[in-house]
Length: 251
Length: 314
Ligand SMILES: Cc1cc2nc3c(=O)[nH]c(=O)nc-3n(C[C@H](O)[C@H](O)[C@H](O)COP(=O)(O)OP(=O)(O)OC[C@H]3O[C@@H](n4cnc5c(N)ncnc54)[C@H](O)[C@@H]3O)c2cc1C
Ligand SMILES: Nc1ncnc2c1ncn2[C@@H]1O[C@H](COP(=O)(O)O)[C@@H](O)[C@H]1O
Image (cartoon, rainbow over all chains, first blue to last red; front, side, top):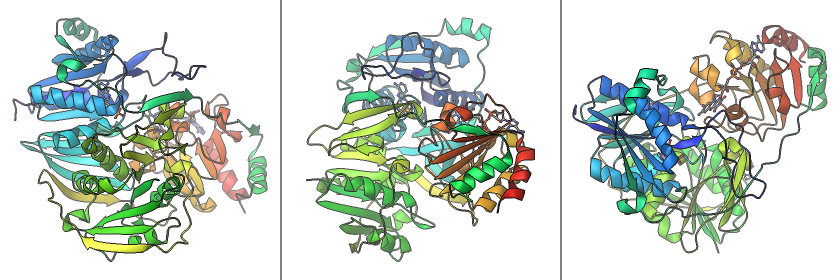
């Protein structure tokens, strides 16, 4: 399927290095002046799509972001990495995973990609749902937590990270993949690529135009700070450590 | 009144340890019925009896079909969707299997899943962690819709095996999709305690330096009767297998004792050990962030500290 399209999710999230702070009124977390980035798993998803294209197994890589208009920035980065075009689906509020999955399903119907590659989780909501939901809505194969993808014509052999080790499954396309950390190492963006990316197209569509009206299903009552762990103390020597462990009944 | 269906995940070692924890979470809903569903190809599995012994369980439903030999999300998901009509809540432990299947079920039922319940406030209101556990979000599920949720196992103790529930087994009709085929599974064998349930865990980080050196961590774990864990950096570098990764995107654990050796204490790692009892950190950098949360810290070179430690252990 060398004329295959691959659709990739690119979520705008608070950068993984930021120490997230909960707002004192419980209405969410502080985002003003906070560094935003592509969800790390989505960079891995994009990298995988780009490699498949470079190997002649796909023709076009489409980066999709659902959210505020500022997600343009993350789409530009995705284009600089090598995606061919971007789609920004704008929403009035932060959509919950089911709405995102419905939006991807609507785009799937328009674009007919052979593969949709998403991250195994977004590091803000830590939901880990959109890929499986999308596969369910489309009634196609899913392979989550992929650490190796071997695409051969109409099927893919996917190695998955599971709690007890490694699992290998074979899926027939079209399919949805979710990627794990060890699938690949995403490339760095080079300056000339940033310039080139400025010329690549980003199409903006409103979620409603895709027929997705409802964006949230769960009511968020409040966001709070978890009880902080009290740090303890340092010991001066291995003897002291063993002493303390004995006192606590661990040895 | 709540009627809860808990997914009774079975593996090569019987009933998954997360099921007894998901049942504890289900009990907090004060359900009128609490059924465990085991989907099997072979009804002689030991794990079924184990599920029937879990305290609080009303009934163990065993559904039999050859296609259930492996936990493929599409196959098992369809079975769960078919059974959803009788329940107000469908829960699964947040294992890789539960996380694979449940969102698919939720989407097909047209509901938003709740991931990683850490506290039940009422039948419809739940706390769950976000931002690597740095925020807790309280959410309310809509009235009149089934609640589909995974349970954060580190937040719940297993219910004891003191019950004696009815087991109701029957063949089940599913049409397995042709788009997915199981090929193989490679699981670590060994005598060590399981990372997810162990009372003590010893973890190594990037500083360990090689897979040969990782044996030092494993040996110390054996001396303490502990399970072995690892940071992402150690797994990425190939010092330890992926199933040992502790953290936001690895395993979230709550042992009584956690010993972090040569691990800096990145937010994503700490997300996996927030509920540990006592955290011990051994690190040669006195400024490493792990010391901010460690109950006991020891500044030093792991290659000197561990041999000394082993000498002094009883
Ligand atoms: C999306 C995402 C998800 C992630 N998920 C996870 C996750 O689930 N789990 C996880 O662990 N990480 C995760 N990470 C990675 C995380 O951010 C850190 O990079 C990682 O935890 C670092 O591992 P480390 O502490 O072993 O290595 P380092 O940060 O390199 O720390 C090594 C430590 O060893 C100490 N040291 C060096 N030599 C010695 C010696 N001889 N004796 C004693 N101490 C020594 C150093 O002082 C240092 O503190 C994730 C990152 C991202 C972006
Ligand atoms: N708003 C979004 N825009 C684009 N992709 C998304 C969005 N939300 C989720 N995804 C994709 O779905 C994956 C899993 O997200 P989640 O289910 O929210 O944890 C992410 O890694 C993305 O690939």
